[in-house]
Each structure stands twice: as C-alpha cells, then as structure tokens.
Amino acid sequence: MALSDADVQKQIKHMMAFIEQEANEKAEEIDAKAEEEFNIEKGRLVQQQRLKIMEYYEKKEKQVELQKKIQSSNMLNQARLKVLKVREDHVRSVLEDARKRLGEVTRDQGRYAQIAESLILQALYQLFENNVIVRTRPQDRDLVKTVLPTVATKYRDVTGRDVNVTLDDAVQLSQDITGGIDLYTRQNKIKISNTLEARLELISQQLIPQIRNALFGRNVNRKFTD
Image (cartoon, rainbow, N blue to C red; front, side, top):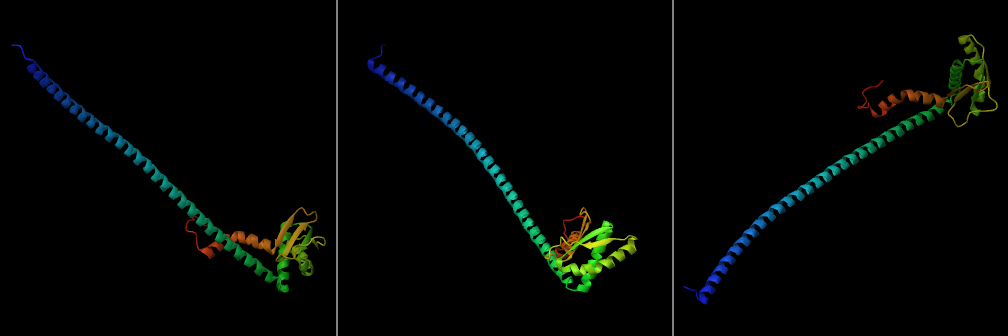
C-alpha cells in the first residue's frame, strides 16, 4: 500500500529523531572521552610543573643552605681573625711594656755598666776582629768609655787576642732607644746590633710560644708544641 504523505512525514520525523539521538549520544561520548583525555593531560602537565617547581625550590633551598654555611664560615673566620689580632696586640703590648721596663735598667749606672760590658763582649766574640767601632747613645758615651779597657782585657784573657775598641765620634745611636750598643768593623761591612731592643726582639721571638701560653693558655688545636 502506498504511504500517505502524513505517514511519510511521520517516518521521516521518526528517523530524524533517531539520527539526532544517535548524534547526541555520539557527541556525549566524544565529549566524555575528550573530558577524560583533557583531565589526564591536565593532570600530567600539573604533575610535570609541580615536579619542576619542587625541583626549583629544592635547588633554591640547597643554595640558601650553602650560602648560610659560607656566611657562617666567613663570620667564624672573621671572629677568629679578630681574636688572633686582639691576642697579637696584647702580646705586642706586653713586649712594649717589657721594653719600657728595660729603660729602668739604665737608671742604675753600676748595673747598666755591667750590662754594657757584657753586650760589647758578646758582640766582640761574634765579630772576632782586631779593630772595632762602638756606637752608643749620646747619654751613654761616658759610661761605655769607662768599660772599654775592662772589655779589652777580658776579651784578651778569653781569646788570647788583642782588640782595639773605639767609640764612634761621627755617628751615634738615637737617644730615644732603651739602651745598648752597636758594633761595626772598621769598614762598616759587618754590624752586630746589641741594643736592648734587639736583645728583647731576639728573646721574644724565641719565647713567643711560651708567652702566648702564659697569656691565653695552651692552644688545643696544636698537635705539636716543639
């Protein structure tokens, strides 16, 4: 039987509704799949960026820790240097005080004459020359002049040699030094400095470890003491 126009239209509408429903279902399926894939990709990207951020801040944290360690080490070294400087300044202060006290020796002319005699003799033994020149402070010239004959005699008794010791009239030691003498050969080629400052410097260099131990105690970081 031939279908009427109404039946044809009805079937067409039915088919269109079916096709539309299929299309909607397919679209929903596509949307769901796309949403799922989007969420998976989004999660992957988020995790990837999260790891990058964590790695970045972990690196920054390590840099900060390293910087703190460097800064702490620098501050510790600076503190140690300050302590060492204060200690060295204190040692110098002690030595300077000793130098000033040496000047008190020269006030006792009898004792100072014996010291000057010993200083000249010691220098003569080192030079071992027949003719030497003595330089002294202006204020010590008369005292040194009086001990020269005794010095020459004692030198001859020990060495069996005569020595001619003369005071230098052209050049004298500074009157500001603590005391003592300098000895020269005739040509001024060899010099022996036996001023009180020179003797103090020599002794202090030898005794610096003992001085530091006396002032600050033993250094626990030192393995050897000789």
